[in-house]
Image (cartoon, rainbow over all chains, first blue to last red; front, side, top):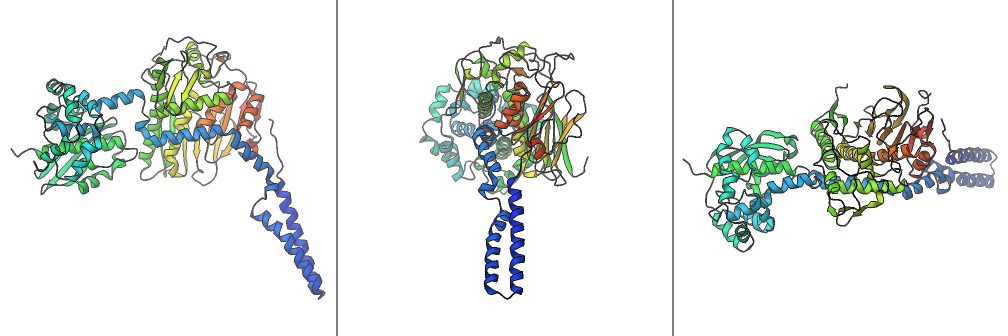
Length: 317
Length: 310
């Protein structure tokens, strides 16, 4: 085996200075015995002179003593642009998270099920119009044109009691129908075929959604329109990673708790453990904040809460 | 196995990935997230999945294709290493790999044909990257093979996910990342596999917080014969490289170590060592005759144990 060894020059320098320090110490102490002050002073001076490099050697290598290391480091700087590229790559991909680094196929999936903020934008607006287009993928895509912040979030945040109007749930049908029997009504409501068939032409949906001026009025009309009935309501929500069931408890017309009842996502739901308390404090699913790296789980939680609240908002039978 | 460790193995990327972290609250979640990165990278960069973004790019040769951060970074690094290695490593060898029969999805056995013929004139220079727009343009019909980069990238992403544990290990079928120190606070001991004797080690090294990746001709072979094709190709010839039996490289990132091991494997003993020296990486190259060639740092920094060496 061919293994090359290199000397460490730093080591011999340390040894030399230590020896020098010992010699001068001996010299200076011996001069004291002779009561010769100038000799003692000289000895002291020598001790200090020898001591400085000794200290420096102990504290850390001086530049000249460490040529080997230095060359290595500078070499790393030059040739390790590749290391920088790989590190930067990992940082970039990691920082973007699973979602934004998802492949083209995933992106298509995600677009067809529409990000929740955008879906909400359409839901709020179309609630005013008789026909609901919320679940039509086309309509969802249309909503992407609308600034979701100005349309959906701001007005709703201002009215914490605002209730989702009678719009079909934004939950994609495939997941909904595969869930429990408790979901059957929602599944019927959300039947995309029916919705698409009844949906107004896409152009119309876009027309409704695009003038932002009309929206605050629409939302204002919705505020206070209904309140929640006290009780306990279950709802399912799904995302690419699976499904979450949330149990929303309404007391005195307000959300008293919104705990995760079942977690069927690929990740443990502990990644969004801060979300249920946030739901209770904010009272409004639209103002839920995203959790870094767990936006999908928050989405599923959001849809589940929306579905439970929809039940809660229904007039008592 | 220790009670205070949490360990999981999952078959992914054509091998078994094993992650080992200290047991505790959040261990299982973090490990699951780490595995998720492997799944994500595989879905993005697989040459065997028609749905992968990589094959989407292949199908759109000769046009400007916007790609995900993940694919962009993987290809950018692969092209960078191709330049640095003078073409000994080249991600554009996918079509040659297919021709040699390395086109089968390992679990479903599904065979993927892109219909693109190997072209000896194709090199990494035919891949254009636009970092501003995050687009990739293949100037000719090209099948990219990111095998040597994607696994490293997945390991590094998983390592980043597990960083807070201080002491963890990721074993992705012989490509390792040893995070921090071992549970006892000492350097991790890593064995280097004997390229010709299954289950035996040819050397032992000590590492802290480093990736150790090995490219070996024994990993994916088309048969038992000594001259059977294996999966590390000489890009220019489109044939299996024969100068080495295995190349092990230690690096700060698995992406770099894995790809550099592949390049060194193609370059052979002398050039391979020079290449690693130039990149300031350390490694051990073993020829088919079992001659060992090590960079000087192997014994000095990683205490390469010579006892096991023939």
